[in-house]
Image 1: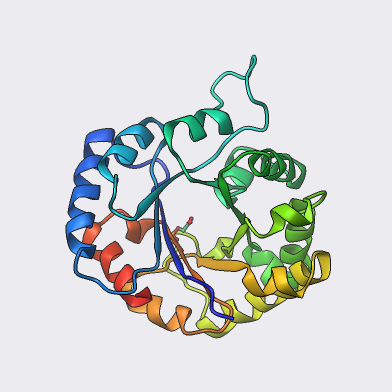
Image 2 (image 1 turned 120 degrees about the horizontal axis):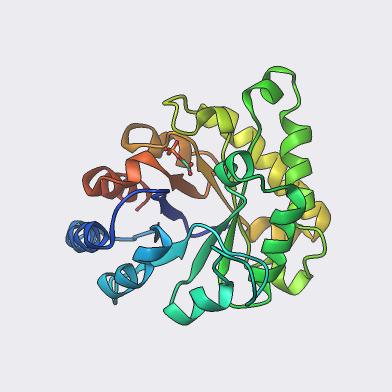
Length: 253
Ligand code: PGA
């Protein structure tokens, strides 16, 4: 089964619209000569999405949002709906990033509602799961990660399952410089793939792209992606610099 790799940049709360434009114009030049590019995705802050879409036009770089709400319209101050993102030309959206869960109180149930809402439209969701250090140290990694996967996917129709991308991001590796070893990542990716197979079927599991995230950078990208169940990377810090992001893309090409 060959799954097309995805290299996604999650910019979090970084870069203005003009910085976004500059980055994308630089990245376009850097990837212009590369062969066999993976899918490339940049997720800037929502106020820079429109600029990003314009700057990435016809470059093969897709633009994603970092979050979306489960209602379409209404009295939900500060939120953005999937319809609004679709109308801008956004193609992907991150769901349930660990920072949303830890800092903004998103529960497994919230993540599930968001995922179902995204799947009712046209965006490609990248749903994030991952254990905390204390979970890992207590030997609860499988229970926590598989539990998050199962609750995120609750009620997802089989016909929608093929659109989902998952990201395994051990919380202890995010922004810390500590990376899961390729072997550690692959073990958890395998657990995730098997649990998705049990929920849907083997074909869905085979096609599912599972990204690794957590201090991914140019010098560990190739090693992580050499693993059989690692289908790309969700990159935070190292996606803010066009040189290092381009190097990670090269490692996936
Ligand atoms: P990091 O972030 O690459 O800076 O660890 C990854 C993420 O949070 O998606």
